[in-house]
Amino acid sequence: MRVSRRGFVKAGAAGAAVLGSHGAALAAGAPALLVYDSRLASSIAFAAASPCPAIDVAREHGRRWQALRGALPPGRIAGLTRWQDYVLVRGMAEDQRRRLVSERRVGNLIAFELA
Image (cartoon, rainbow, N blue to C red):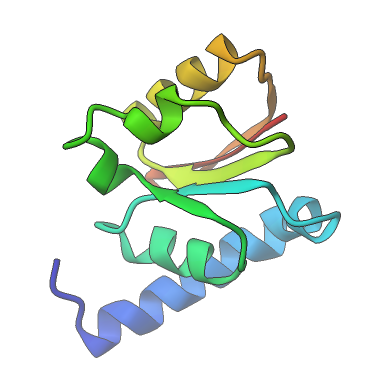
């Protein structure tokens, strides 16, 4: 994906908006894992705001979701993805006894947290 300066600034603003409203949960303690989509500038900004380990769903499509089918780290999982990727992540996390804590639409993306 090619990102222009304008697109990057817009993504930063969108990421700040996501973190502003979703940031209280992240500020309570860094999640054990972030789930983001490197094809989406706002999702990249979301992932860049936290130093914790992250899974890129754009790469997982080619790996048949290997990273998520394996054992997830203990703790919270936070993400910002498209709906279809969110549904897949949530289903795989539920298979490992993780439950949805929050889900919120941010533009055309879903911000979520699992624990």
